[in-house]
Image 1 (cartoon, helix red, strand yellow):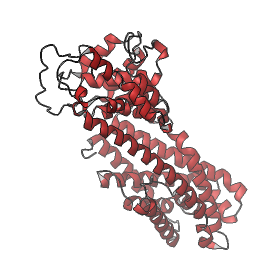
Image 2: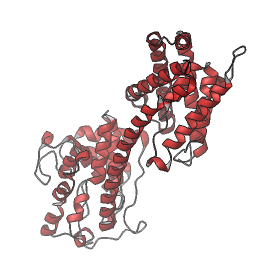
Image 3: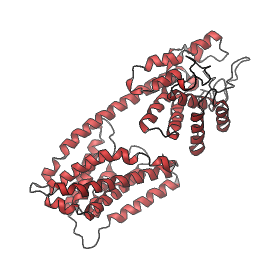
Image 4: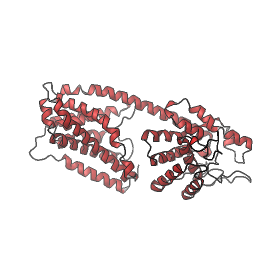
Length: 443
């Protein structure tokens, strides 16, 4: 993300200006600066620990929302918003451009906390916290948490629309639903912190609320550690295929990307989109069981050699069928060379007998094969490849998947890549060598 589009910078700048306005304290409002400093230091320290090497993984930003929401329940809106700034600006950004990402995150949190504090105060929540009336405080706190969640979702969806040109109906879909439950738990912990803070036991007692949050964070970290191990397993398998079949280096990742584009266009849930990305990445893993001389052969394949290569879906399925987290991706590995008219392999399935995941990967696989230069074929223009997919829709490919890819590529584009070792001058196949005149004829 080195070259950030101007429209994205303008969007971030507008959000940052709005955040700065929220930080201006209104006249006549007394700010307890010691409480602001303590909460800000606590939030910044928690974020540093959560994203340090000691934690073992890079933990998602916002782990300690309870501290921010406690500030929203305790402090004036401008002071509560200030609590988020040091932690957001000092925490690791992960990717470049670092400064822009930190400014964006700080501005986003400032707006969210400011809104939550204003809603909480308007509903009389601060008086309930001061009096320790927890039952009455639950209503204003819940409204504040909902406002906080809505602001973050609104800004996150906006950045998707502006930076990635995602359609509005997809940019905001599911953002609130996915984040509301965990943020509600953080809000409850923040409310307990605020009530204890105002109790005779003071801020020290409030810090005890963070202990169970740390336990839950650790459990969440283990989930992400397991997820990272899954990613490492997939990378290792794909690297092995790329080393063995150098002519198609990078093909697996691009098929995964195209599969994800199709799945998103079809409105699939994010979890399933991720599984279909795995399916695209691993679809050719069975080539590890095919002799290298056949994969790298420049001349035409004999019928016996082609039958050996056509065993790679079954080899691949044997390799991945014990990997539980892949789910329906395993069926895609086995059936991505099936055709709707029943002339595919390995089992000659017809129409809807072919798993949906395999129908997605089949379109993505053929599309990348046609738009990539290899030793035995030159790349076709994207428009030509899409037209060929549409021509074969209904016989070889599922028309729904083809239409989804055409729509997605038309909106976000596609960068065809050269995958042969010699990118500029693909070798001309000897007389009689098979040149794929139809999608899916690649090896």
